[in-house]
Amino acid sequence: MNVSRLIPTAAVAGAAILGLTALTACSSSDAADHRYGGKLNVVASFYPMQFLAEQIGGKHVSVTTLTKPGVEPHDLELTPRQIGGLSDADYILYLKGIQPAVDDAIKQSGSKDVVDASTLTALEDHGTETGADEHGHEHHGDEAGADPHIWLDPVKYAEVAKGVGKSLEKTDPDHAADYRKNTDALVTKLDGLNTAYENGLKNTTTKTFITTHSAFGYLAERYGLTQEGIAGVDPEAEPSPARIKEIHTIAEKNKVSTVFFETLASDRTAKTLAKDTGLKTDVLDPLEGITDRSKGADYLEVMQSNLAALQKALGAK
Image 1 (cartoon, rainbow, N blue to C red):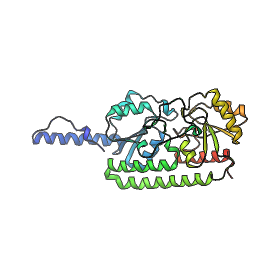
Image 2 (cartoon, one colour):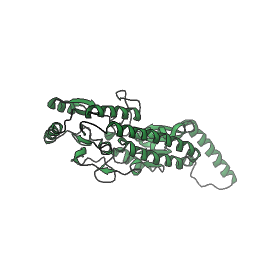
Image 3 (cartoon, rainbow, N blue to C red):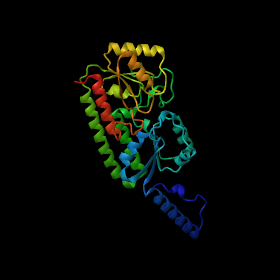
Image 4 (tube, one colour):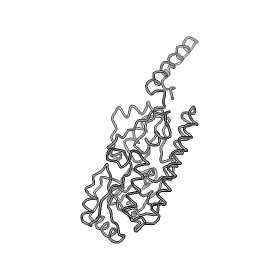
């Protein structure tokens, strides 16, 4: 627990003043411990970061998320209370480039224990075959055009998990052993998920899938698939007539059976395209939030549901 900021910063002189300061520090620490139950006060930007913090932090952390269930993360606007709360956090975990409001608020907060998940693995550019945004949408990482959806690749997500574990050990060394244990357990689960995807998508009738939200570039690259995004990385963007025509051709050429949509954004475009092309629709969840409409209670369960949906749509053998 970082209580250094709770200690008054006025200059201290003399034994009496030192004693008073020590008493003040103790009482302030006790108040903080009571408020958070003696746990590390962790703020996560949105669900993929929240899941990591909870899984790795375990009983030693109290996690709050800036993005409430059902809110589209890319368009998040923070309340003054949320912005003010950042300066009270012991540890902040976010993914730079995907939520501009969060990036700005964290920069202004001056918080010290801040971890940017995009620095814990290598971000990559994805071309038009993975649905890259041709309109220059700005929720990218430091590299221009870099795809921020790293959590949808279990291998990259495991790399991020390892980095988060090490950073929590540094922030709260008293519980380092538990953080290491929890990190190892999560990485083992993610390794198993990766194996399930490798085996489940090895032999399929087609390797191409169509999505409204081009969030699955890393996943497609990892498992030898091709993602065709209808409207790029912005889930609310409207596709151009030329892109719609192109998608029609792609669907016919590659024997695509399904158009995928997601739970947090409108399914109108997907259903219209499916109707025009005689295709089916199904959910492929980009896991930017968990709601009662999610096909699973957490990251691992929803990723398993995504695998089943892909196997069905791609004609897994």
